[in-house]
Image (cartoon, rainbow, N blue to C red; front, side, top):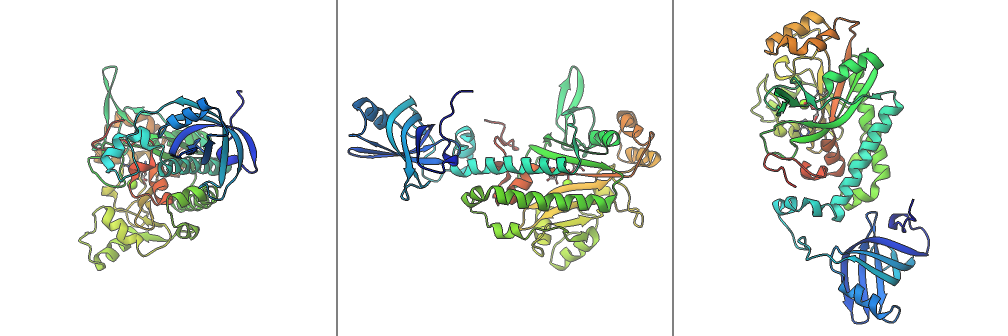
Length: 430
Ligand code: 4AD
Ligand code: MG
């Protein structure tokens, strides 16, 4: 391992050494040059004094432009006037590469410009904080699942069939045969759940979403979990504990990032299991009372989700949607055959649906009937039907949209900032 330079975020006491990073700001006043140097973990103020360095070093520091890469060496001490609380008195200054004129300035830029510059925009304090928050959420989700005996079994991305309806499928050519990018790993997880009991996957999923909203991506990351011998009630209990614990741990670990994002963490501190439950029919009745034009049988859009979440400071489960507006694999409600044992988890503060989940049909004949009704080819799903032939059991699962969860925890206006390189209806680049 090469000797590592000092890490700004890990500074605890005065020291000396080298910091490698990028110039986040620079100003000079005669014999003094003040730089803010960012190393990826934090920002430190660096002072180059004409009388403390040789002429070449001073010239190099003077030459540094915004986002130039540098190596600075010197003494680090506490400095209350520095934004980070630390300052380096520079004795050696290496300009690794002098940056060309940086396109992102201090002035306000429009979203299209910033998205075009996404490869550079990620360096900003706010965007870096979001990436760290996302990393933490992934870490906490994985830790929770691992601690609760869920085994990671990743699902394929190239698949021969649809799982979540055929309208948002991305078609590609698989050596002359059509293939589709995965919309969810769920069907494959149902197979691994019969091998291992409790399983999850975590990977990119794809939906050719034709809508432009603040919560839809074309490529997003999903964590699907599936558990054998767990019914609808147990499924919701797993979800509420997972979400409450992940939020508590994430807030604890990433307070600084949440502060950078201006997030009001008091709303997150209230999140505790159990979460309230509301049936689809109750939700529709309530929405109508509140003036919504929704009818029984309609699906919820963003306005409906927002109206519902206004009444709660907890996430709320909407249970038992109509069979016709949900996927083919959901188990019917025993008392209401036209409703299914499913639930969407709606986040508070208008952030909308975070999780979709359900108990799955475990009866062979019923699943075959549903495939026919949904006009899906039985032969395409032969392996999936097999799972109902060899030791079928009641089982349930759910899928969390990572960027939706990050958006909510971070209080981020638009989902496109919750993923490093967003894929949107009109955006494939950079
Ligand atoms: O509700 P969905 O469609 O459920 C499923 O795909 C199930 N097969 C999951 C399962 O039971 N294993 O998607 C799950 C979650 C949604 O609640 C949402 O958070 C996210 O995935 N999601 C999206 N996130 C960003 N952009 C999109 N276009 C999304 N579509 C779904
Ligand atoms: Mg859904």
